[in-house]
Amino acid sequence: MASLLQQVQSKMFIFAHRRALALLDGEYGSVFKGRSLDFDDLRPYTPGDEVRDIDWKATARHGSPLVKRYVAVRRQTVLLVADTGRNMAALAASGECKRDIAVQALGVLGYLAHRHGDVVGLVHGDAEVSRTVPPRRGEDHLERLLQEVDRSAVLDGGPSGIARQFDFVLRNFTRRMLLVVVADELLPGAATEMLLRRLQARHEVLWFTVRDAELAGPVVADAFEVADGSGIPSAIAADPRVRADYLQARTEREQRRQEFFRRLGIAEGRAGSSTEVLPELFALLERHRTRTSHRTRASHSSGRTTSPEGRQHAG
Image (cartoon, rainbow, N blue to C red; front, side, top):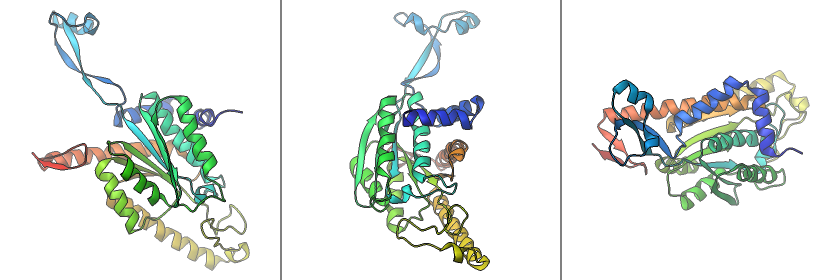
């Protein structure tokens, strides 16, 4: 049987052609630099320089030896923060298990980070407990992360509560990282919002939502909410008035969710099926890059800079 990472890679090639995968890889690389050294500029050769650093094409054009100068770039640490409470064992909008879509999203992001030399860690759990796998490199390590998520998100598990994982990250991780949150369609309350704002002050935060199945939808008969057992019997859900009211309430809730992410300036991606994961991840990275560049320009125009810890200093 193929490993979870192999299944993720197979789906990547099934759902996207080679050019799309190259674009996704490039989008990740344009946002999060993962090499230990980056080319900076050229300068004249001086005795003692490494001969291998000479740029021979530039030297031929210039007429005298030029060497490449590099700057050190700290490898990115990517921390995957996943809800593995029982909500993630329920059905997604497509009728697939939300856990499987979450594993696909986590696997793609982990694989991209691996390709760029970044280290990847995991914090996951429910409203009662958080578990962690420290950041490391390697495909075997990625497989372990995916297996942790896959076996933890079960119907008889603890209730979902991503705030518990946010609190865990705040108490245990101080170095600046990229946080990728994977959860279902929760609408964060005031306490969760406060924790998330504190996380934003220390880290870069992206959010990936796995969309819920509709309780009054066609995916399953007599659907119910695994969090509390509530639901709408199919006989009642068939009533056009009930369905209209349900869809209206769902639309209003989604609007509040989107407003929440806009207010905090967090880029969000949403997928209700495995086929939506790749395009939504590409869009998520693109939105994050755009928002980051806007914040940088705004910071520069106001004469202020932001430290890695998120504190602002007057210019």
